[in-house]
Amino acid sequence: MTEFITRQQVDEAVVAIRSRAHIQPQVGLVLGSGLGSLAEAVESPVFIDYADLPHWPRSSVEGHVGRLVIGHLEGVAVLAMQGRAHYYEGYSMAQATFPIRVMQFLGIRTLIVTNAAGGLNLSFRAGDVMRITDHINLIGMAGLNPLRGPNDPSFGVRFLDMSQAYDPALGALAHSVALENAIDLREGVYVCLAGPSFETPADVHFLHAIGADAVGMSTVPEVIVARHGGLRVLGLSGISNVLPLEGTTQPTRHEEVLDAGRVLVPKLTAIIRGVLRAMKA
Image 1 (cartoon, one colour):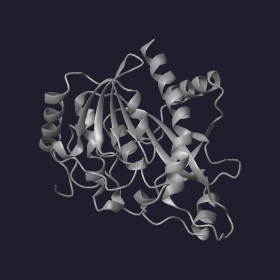
Image 2 (cartoon, helix red, strand yellow):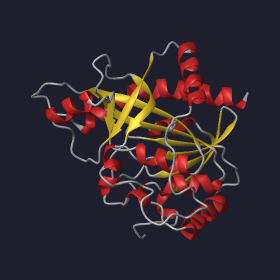
Image 3 (tube, helix red, strand yellow):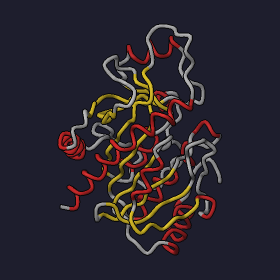
């Protein structure tokens, strides 16, 4: 795959998916590190390995199964991604967000994106779920924007408004569902870094100072492409650990992310199921 993607590449992936799954998905789900088991709740699933789809980026990260799960959840047709590709794995931003572009041309109009994130807000605790209200595109500010390069008008406009990247109505719905399920749903600003190294104490201090509540290595590029394609977005971060503002001798480990994912899955499952149920109603 070249650095930039084309409409032909997107169409080829769309045809490959439609030839295997005869369901019109309405909602796309992107499941992050340790959260892939959420797809096990999908009813009458059709599984498609990423390796079987043309141009589809594959993840090498532990906890990312690497397949699509297409079926129904709470009566809504969904396409769930068990794992995502990341910029730090060597893909361009356009390549890493290729699946979102494919969702657009599959006719999906709503994206629910999840991630595992480090908590920067001092009131957060490991195991919390945070609804993303906004984001700081730190790597995009440095030039790594997924919309960089030639703009195909069929994808979206050249200059994209991002004033409401995360759909307020979907956010309110998520809070209502969380309340019904006695889940303390936090909210805040997510900041995206390139990774794969974790943050230094000085990084953490800086990110906290500029207004970020959680930090991770994904999601923001996907949300930009989703909004470019006209999709509504609900973003949910699973807080895997809380990053101290001062130096610490306790290293941050990827295993922590996976362990926290096991705690977070029931909460995320309840929220996502409730949102889908309300959307169907």
